[in-house]
Amino acid sequence: MNLTLEAIRILDTIDRKGSFGAAAVALDRVPSALTYSVRKLEDDLDVLLFDRRGHRAKLTPAGRELLEEGRHLLRAADELEQRVKRAANGWEVELRIVLDAIIPFDKMLPLIAAFDREQAGTRLRFSTEVLSGTWERLVNGDADLAIGVSFDGPELVRTSGGFRVKPLGEMDWVFAVAPSHPLAALPEPLSAAVVQQHRAVVTGDSGRLLPGMSSGLLSGQPTLTVPTVRDKLLAQVAGLGCGHLPRTWAQPFLDAGTLIEKQTEGSKAGGPPQYAWRTDTRGKCLKWFLNRLADPQVQHALLEA
Image (cartoon, rainbow, N blue to C red; front, side):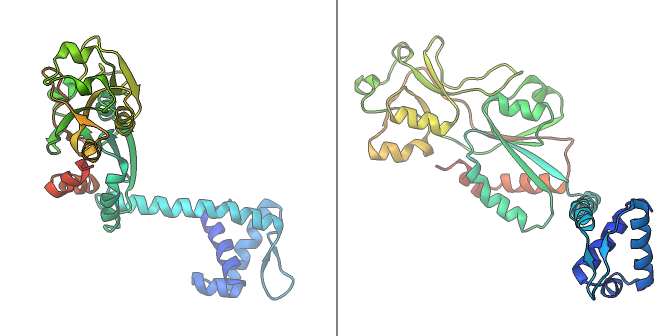
């Protein structure tokens, strides 16, 4: 007998039930059939799997090793069976979602909890990118859904028909500096020439292949590049540079006086955030998330501070 999932399942049941007779009842088999299967497996492997002395069937060290590793196979087979059934019912095995840095992952937690109540079993895989890096994941097929993308995306998105893009809501941007920053004391509106002389704090574009994007950055302006929007906020609060921030992120610091809003003539931040998806992904999980993202209350929750 070759080592099969059925043979491993028999060993597992005998071990859990404690005897060949109890295992036979659980498997709806006659005890002699289980005895034959185990002895045949022992002959094929040339090892003793059970110590048959005493009233309880006890695995030998070799039998225990076989069963412990075999249980991984049983779990994998059961998971595969469930994934196949879910796929047959229209639920994706996995949905890959990429977030732009303006959408912190913790904002997705209520949506994940709501989706779990569907008991669909679809695996959710999240990643975070910045600016063109978010589009790049979607275009390359590394993500099925992108949330928080800015600008219009690369030409392929606009012309191929393989992608859909919808607005996620409005985001108000504020140009802010710390009270100690040189720009804080200057009269408004600040000209582009004045702003250009001071270092901007920017969130680094994570794209590798698509042309890089920038938001509110003036040509030739010195920069301090940081990993996330939160890092950008903290750097500006520390007086290390200037730049645009989502108003919902900056408002508590504006209220506390640790940031000051300044009106500018030239530099503007990017357009409203959007969500985009690949049209070749049509499973129920994607449809569920798209329905939720179209809800104004969900949009507000994702974009608030």
